Amino acid sequence: MSDAVIAPWLQLTLEALDHAPEQLEDALLQAGALAVTLEDGGDQPVLEPAPGETPLWAHTRITGLFDAQTDIEVVKRQLRRFLHTPDLPECRLTALEERDWVRVWLDHFHPMRFGRRLWICPSCQPPPEPEAVNIRLDPGLAFGTGAHPSTALCLEWLDGADLTDQTVLDYGCGSGILAIAAAKLGARRVWAVDIDPQALIASDDNAAENEVEDRLELLDPAELPAALMVDVLIANILAGVLAQLAPELAQRVKPGGRLVLSGILDAHADAVQAAFSRYFRFGPRRQREDWVLLACVRREG
Image 1 (cartoon, rainbow, N blue to C red):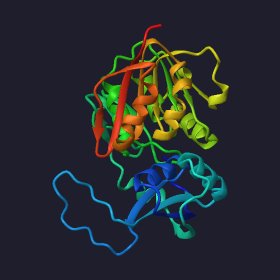
Image 2: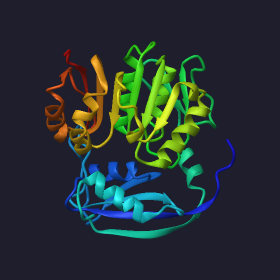
Image 3: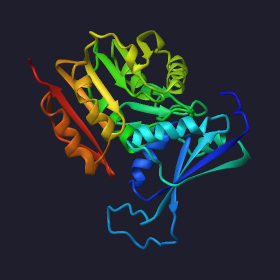
């Protein structure tokens, strides 16, 4: 890997007043943030939590890190769309001193295993298990390295699925991590779509790095062939968007095919499942921290 370019960065800070901090975090990542941090916005100490709890402050401040060339007005439009609101929370934009933030990030990014055989590895480090299914991935301008619980749930599901000779659609591909994993785990053909052109560029680069570009087709959702139906559709996007897309996603899955939905906070899982229940039979839920994965099978007929 060549040395990262050292450049100034932008920080967009939002106050979590009318939205859950997790929603704002996910929206910033999907809008292209390289990293997101959460901090106390009201000088409120968090005392010893109960076992299993991940406490947040009553007033949480969320900051997204963006490349200096990013059009923040475009980011704000994406955030409003992701959050389904005409008005953003109070926000502040600041420039960050020049520093090799990608290198700083890589210093804390180590190979991660998902399931029995799937690894996500930065290109600067050797794979711990060379004979395993290894995906080379470095931080970039698109969401998805496997560190977020919703992505981790999807990767674990893919690792446990038999994808041999299957067709797969990754709806909202981000970095392309799920589409690449599907291809490396045996899928015959994979389509990956995203409304963000930067995500498609990142996915294309990552597919080439992992030598699966011959089985992966990258598109804007509007460019999908009208008659396309797949064996497996995986969508790791916001809960509200998933519910709105239920009829469209359902028509893309073959009868008896599988649908995997993630990016869903536990509090929203029932509503998402209800939106899809007329089309699919649901299995047990999987959960990591506050995030839920719903897996289901398309009803026949």
